Image (cartoon, rainbow, N blue to C red; front, side, top):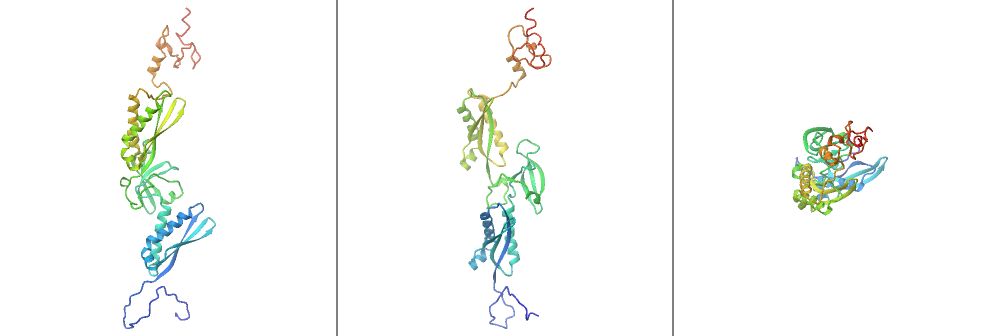
Length: 337
């Protein structure tokens, strides 16, 4: 029933010379094919086009060598963005598989902002974790922090639907992972980030010595990181009511930040404690006993009489309590008698 109907042959063959040969080899036939992707408004079209073309080249490299025809992109606008049509040469007999492989690569590059081993943060949920499994339907994280105050792994698995992650902000702390090693664990692919620790010093402290103490502590702890990144630690400062904020900034490995900060803080504390030119800024009397000794005055006022019955400390030696307004025993009522 083929006579009278249009028939398209995707695999045209040369004229057969030997008609008596029953099994004939079919010559490879190449045809033009395309895949279509809708790119939403606000996207970087140059980057999207590059992803499409590179994905096609990775899959159809052998075909490009034979046909000498590179993949290319054509586009057209639609209501919510731009439709990009990736066109490439493919095998007529293997067209579905090649299209699927290209689409898979495009999807992974456009919609997968993290890989196995990355440390990511989801600010909307207050979750930080290491990606340990990226499944077909769910992503599993090992939570970092949560039960503890720092970014130490707590080894608590969190399972999140992949569809949900497409609609929230995701911060990737290890986004510089090498393309050649996409599936290595974080421990084998080192990624660095900037971190800081803040210390308060008094106005009469020696700034140069304070900076020397802080930078020296960072250099001792992060010496290997400085060699790898070429970035030295440095200090920035802010002034506040009771002294100066000294902000030490340094490079750390993304997954070892808590330990590095702890060792640097310990080194800074030891250095300031031993220094005679730098002192910690404290905005209040932090010791009750030392405060009592400081406000002890000579005369008839005994140490215990410096406290009102309401429990408030009479810091200025006043006759009346600044808290309850009542006369404090021993401050002045007995002096005239």
